[in-house]
Image (tube, rainbow, N blue to C red; front, side, top):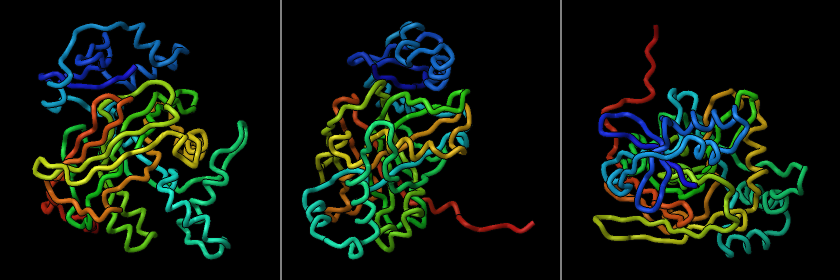
Length: 329
């Protein structure tokens, strides 16, 4: 089952199930979060809860996308109660990168980046019931940074770069019992400032404080072991860069269970009713191939198992807002 959230022309919200070229409205549902919380309360799965509500009116999916009526597939009425985070160095990447790691020899000669990657390869997929090595972790922001599918990413005036990061994200709701419940997964563009990060790896935290997008669809259920999609960059309607985008545990050095454990082991992330979007990392970047984006460039990230591609563009630098200035009271 693949779910979307969308708006009608009068601004009312709806939840829908994707059926081919159509979106079928889920009766009485106004948010995926509410449906998920009802499923938790009833002790059933998300798909079963949707089935119990039944489906109603049909809408043309392509029209909803073209008119920017499709919302992110999970959100919170109060953006402050939606946490966006992620993990890095989780995917195996190219054979060349792995060869370089294996040839490095003594761990003392490794960079911090390669050391963490090596730890993940050796201990990121623990046996059932055991805890593996913790991954690199970063905070992106709250729900206010999420850009809906089809819209442009705002670019801060102080940014050095505006680059895509095609990833799979896990979508979660915290239940009344303070336990995290995974609703499913979505394609995401984690969108980062790679030039800033390249200056010094300690600037990683700064480089991640940017907008992001995910969706348009929430894929209910387990994640396939192997996912092979495509990440493309278009300029003036022409593809200027394209590469395969691999994900799923078969292409990762960490298990999803391990990544989820090391995020939700923190008590402050278990507030009932909160929403979490957690990006699982990538090994595919146009920046790694020497590409620098410009305003108007379009990102297109597709995985066949997730339905419609996620499309966003690079916006112009926001020069109207002057950040960082404090007023003394």
